[in-house]
Length: 451
Ligand code: UDP
Image 1: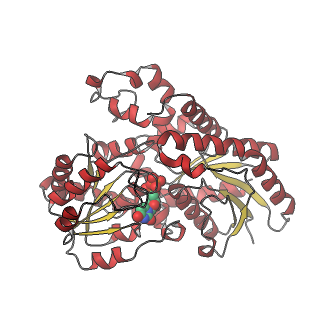
Image 2 (image 1 turned 180 degrees about the vertical axis):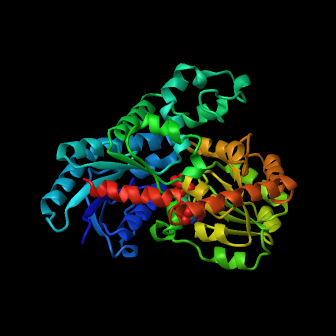
Image 3 (image 1 turned 90 degrees about the vertical axis):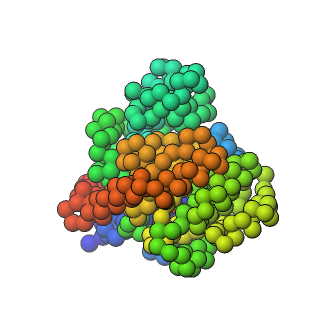
């Protein structure tokens, strides 16, 4: 018998589309029919999902929204704008879907990205249960929740001399992590965070792309802060790969190049789909990589170096210095790269998907967090799970070279590899019958069927 239909609404960014479409596949495999609601902006690749129905809604024009993507402040502005101007067209769209639904295929609930907090008011108006998908770690959401307290305690206005001090209210963060996490203090951030928190608290349930064993220490805090049913059912990409929902073509030469390298000899470098660096940082990265004398596979996303199309700032002398040891692509099949036997280390911006993908393949990390949840993820990698290092001084060639050697050559790196291999095993176990994520998914399915 059919279990009914679910409406899923992802935030249209790569790091949010991937987990929402993976979740859609997971729930489809449990017998639910799926409708993905989407916008024309970063519209998902429908041909990879012939088993889903897609419904676009005619959003107000977000003319120029791509030009808003240049820096963090603009991402927050863009999110707030989406939450404002999408209300009416989204309401119309869901109303239409409800009135066209049939008794044989009833719509059970809406599952929307937590950052699209306006959807709670739509769900309330239409008396449709709403479940939230939070695509970050529990620990970073706990830090977001603590923002008013951290602000009140003065952590955002501390002297530079305090920057290495611990944040007692949010371990293992350092003072400098707080200002980097919330670097765009001000009204836009307040609007975003309060919408995110109240929209999540008002939801019927909360789904996490994480697993209990990884974030045990913070789970009780989250259950207290969000006293609704919480479902830790991840890691999603172990059920379905992220490749199907990639918005950019993945360059498969990354894999053929890795095939020619020795086991555990390559550093994989990628800063995800949004983070950008300036030209000076790019040179520092390139020289740090060149001086490490290690092989590396580097994803340089077009537009990731501010003010350049792609690799134009790369000086010829540097290209020559690294040509034997490097392969550079615009976008890689990341999950497969991390799973490749040649990959030894991942220098990452610590987006949550990248962090989880690396943990699940047992690949230690070098961390260059940029904004939002990335600072907390990086501190957990270094100080809680002890499976990587944070570059403390931004992007600076000598520190880069030292960090690469510490993880890829020194004894320290071997210990990190052992610890992350044990997390990898836990990630595998939690999905098997009786495991924590397996059980949580079973309760999520029963929960949805109770609507
Ligand atoms: N990704 C990819 N190819 C790349 C770089 C990234 O397919 O060259 C994928 C990666 O596997 C992950 C997502 O893009 O699933 C990035 O999400 P994350 O949360 O790590 O970072 P964001 O892009 O949201 O900052």
